[in-house]
Structures are given as structure tokens and as C-alpha cells.
Amino acid sequence: MDKELIIKRLSELAKEFNRDLPYEMIVNTVEISRFKEFAKGEIISRVGDDASCAGIIVNGCARSFYIDKDGNDITQAFAIEGVFCMSSGMIGFKKQNTTWEALEDVTVMIFEVKKMKELIMSNERLMRMWINVLEEDARFKIYRESSLLIENATQRYLDMRENAPELCNRIPQRYIATYIGIAPESLCRIRRNLKEQ
Image (tube, rainbow, N blue to C red; front, top):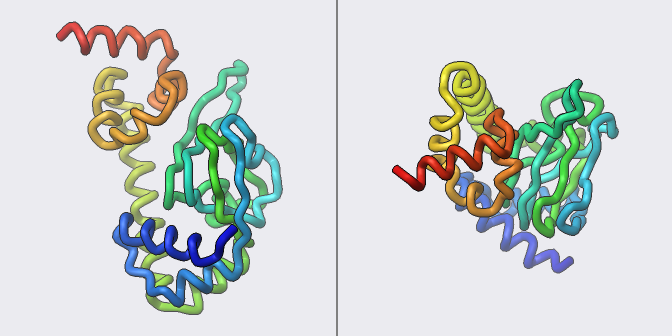
């Protein structure tokens, strides 16, 4: 994979996500990473895999999921360009706590968690950025938890369409359904009702 092309792509993603990362920091990140391509439908990592490595999606879209006690496939999160995947180790887990699957052909920048954390802690700017990422993630998790508790399925779907329209256009409806906590058939009814209104 062309190193300069990857650095350019990561610079574009940093700007897109309002991350003020100087060129040198992006180069340092690339130096400690390897890049792997996964075909659509391929498993990137599984529940229970060692979590000493994590990744960032460079191109494509992936989802994390788990199988519940009744054998249902439940989508936990989605990751598009610039978003972490298989990141359990970045928040202290020793093992991956979900399975990650490529929903499109995906390129992942994979790095050792230990090396990435050392790089983050060695630079005040990166530390501030990491704190912002953690705060954004915590806010999102609180919002998602409360929406699952207090909003009905139609409202959860409308919120997702409003807040993540690109995801709604890229992701199969069955995964959106399990992500918002309903069966795929229920999402079909909701979408039909919304079209009729």
C-alpha cells in the first residue's frame, strides 16, 4: 500500500472529523501501523480475540455485533472512514468484546494498542484529541442508552436517519433494525408507515 497515499487519506479524514493533526503526527501514526484489506462479509476480528491491537477504518464500512443468549445477531456499532474498530483494547479490555464484520470492502489501519497509547501520551495535542474522542464516545453511549429506554422504535429510526444519513444509505436495513433494537420485519413496517404519511 502506498505510504504517501495513506498519509494523504488520513490527513483528509482528520480534517473531516475536525481533528487538528499535524502531518508529522500522522506520519508517526502510519509508522507504527500496518494496513489490511478485508472483503465485504469478511470477519475483521471475533469476540474473544486478543485485544492488544486496534484499528481505524481508512476506507469502507464495518459493524460490530454479538450473538445474544437466544442466538440473535445484534448490531452494537458501525464504523466508517476515520472511526475506530476492534477498539476494545483502547479502553482497557484484554479480549475483543464484539465481532467486527466488513459491510463493504474495507481497509483498516491496524496498530498495537500499547504503541498507540505511548504515542498519544507523548504529545499534549494527541492527549487532548484522545480525551475529546473518549468524551464524544461517552456522550454517544449515554444518548443511545437513553433512546433505547425511552423512545419508541419509530423515533429511534428517525433519529438515526437524521443523525447518520450516510450510514442509513450504506448499511443493510436488517443491521439498522438490530442496532435500534427491533426485528427487521418491524423496521419494514415502520418504513412503510413513514412512506404512507
